[in-house]
Image (cartoon, rainbow, N blue to C red; front, top):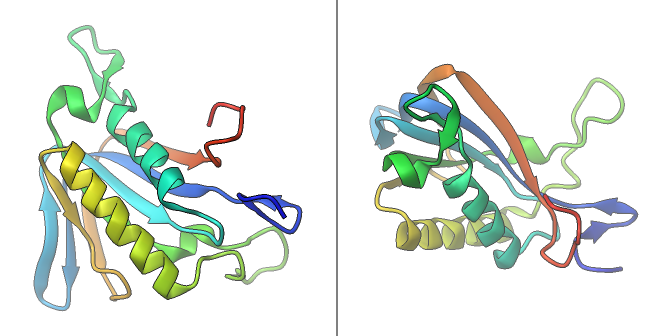
Length: 166
């Protein structure tokens, strides 16, 4: 089976990104991560995802042009505006919802694998961007945000060897 597939299904690293004027993650009564203007990125990790795919997704998130320029066009990236990045692990993004009325999680990475990949993704993000905060892997988190726009995009990144632009 080639990398990047499960059976006949391609796997992707997933980010649901939202342009926010502020966002915070709380676990119990404590704040574990908070940003002002920037991007809240909910991250779903599937079986077969790896560090290279995570780095490709991170580059897309940092460079995705969802902030308005002087003419009101979405022409600026998170890097351009110097905003914050809040990365939140969310395994439910990796759910298989193709049939029935209950999600299946057989496509999600095993928790220990997903934790390691999320940790590596966070480390790389902190090397490449000034303001990076995170949620807490495996915890019951309360995420609050003010979605600016609203502007929300679902990014999926294929294996780097795929010739199709992700």
